[in-house]
Length: 581
Ligand code: HEM
Ligand SMILES: [Cu+2]
Image 1 (cartoon, helix red, strand yellow):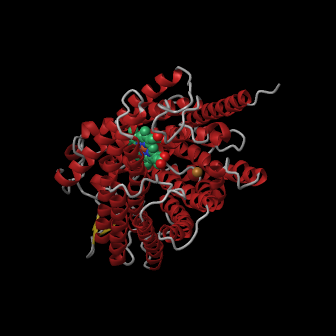
Image 2 (cartoon, protein in one colour):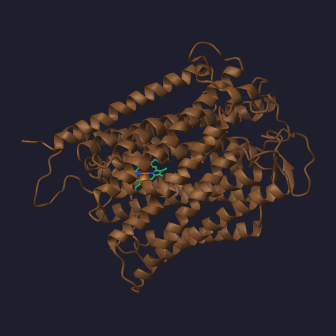
Image 3 (spheres, protein in one colour):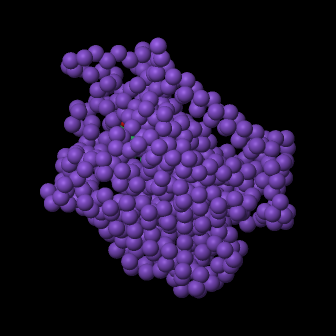
């Protein structure tokens, strides 16, 4: 980060007293607008989550079948599409204009794009709530929604594509106007990765939603298998945008909270590039039980190409904690193997969110993802509760958790407000992450016993056949409900803290000293560990050796052991299905 603290703010810029970055008025306003809409979507999606959860909890079984699928559609769209994407638009403005001290290229167009996205989202919301789009967020053909649903998605995507273009244009402006020195920071590089994947994703989106829109108007036919293949080019790649954005935020949070160093720029950047290269092929893991594709195609795509994207995540899963460990050690926390971890700022919600995001994403999301994405094993995981168990550990405990963590820094740094209810904010990441962990693990276990996903009534009342589950299932579903409610509480705490801070919060003021801010913003804001990098840091950049981060090595080995165990346990489970003789 630049260290030009105190440089005069010229015209439309203000200098952030904490980071020394020059923040342009347009960047500021666009980040705020997108963040606010993202939070509204999170609120709607969160309320829907509670209703869906209380229905899947068989003992309560709240909604009727029509409303169950309606609210499940509302949950998926608001969370996965609107919350995540509006937040990512804010991240793109931040990683380009703010981190590079630049103005936003074409800010007016930015507002048009924002309006387009809000309009598109509004159309989708209307069709869903009016009961004209009970098709779930995958909108698989031949399920048919009102044409405005598809048109809304298209407008929303066009808006997002325009923001991505503004992001690239801003990079060019920053380069031409020499607003930064050397190459772009790693966080911006990660955002560039996300933006490139976003282009790939949105092209797939256009390729599928435009024909589907025409199909909904009876203007052309639509094949279910073709739909699934092209749709997952959108559906899976968009998850990789989320992962790339999440990892970029991991690096940012590491720097902001403990002054984490980048152990090796080349490795981190190469890992980001792997995402771009291999992600489209990995989409095939969604088609592993589809009859339209042969086993060779499936295996090549999922058991070879997919692992290259997984490799990238594992590299980041190593370099992020390694950077935190080295950063802490360089500041004198050298005691034993884990002294740096014990002395870390666990009360800083940015830091706890970072650690929880890395751990749950890696241990639960990553391990289950690789396992279920294996061609052979997929048959016992497909369409069971194991799948939502997996992705609530990735996109929710990983990406959403990281977004929540960075918000505690965005409130003071961008909104210039203190964090309201700071005591509650310190607890929020723990409540959300522990709830999500219980929730997703319980779902995964219930799925192992064959409980289907997206199912209104797993007891099959009035069906002409009997379905008997293991008695463990009732317990698992109960545990899932408790975990889910705890996570929803954590989500509610987040919304309360952010909305209150932004709209009714106390302004930060110009004073950024400990005494004035302690207890109302995360400590990284005033302690500024990223500015005071010790001298040896430069040497570490070049010579970062494994021996200098023993704690991370131990953690990584524990991870690999868990990985191996779960992976082979699933081959064992598969062998029970194929009883020979
Ligand atoms: C706040 C706590 C949350 C709870 C309690 C929760 C709960 C649930 C439940 C019970 C389901 C239904 C699973 C099924 O029946 O197959 C579900 C589905 C889903 N959730 Fe969440 N969720 C939460 C947060 C999120 C977030 C933050 C995201 C995305 C960022 C998300 C994305 C999804 C998606 C994409 C689905 C699948 C919808 C479908 O199958 O069409 N959830 N969630
Ligand atoms: Cu996928």
